[in-house]
Image (cartoon, rainbow, N blue to C red):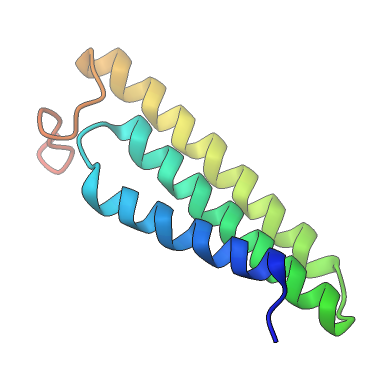
Length: 97
């Protein structure tokens, strides 16, 4: 049986996935949706592991990956706003540059 935190983590993941699909105009909204998906999966993973008595080392590794993903996303956002002047996905075709 799933406890409250794992259910809440899965709900966070699903709602942020819906937000990721529907709100794809700005890069910052996509980054926020990705962070919420990562935090939701972290919440579900940590509650499952702690409920079963597993090791918490994998939680620290996963949290480190989330932090690296967030810092990389913010650096790409700063680079895009410096080069193009905005963070719209429609105006920046990154494949042609």
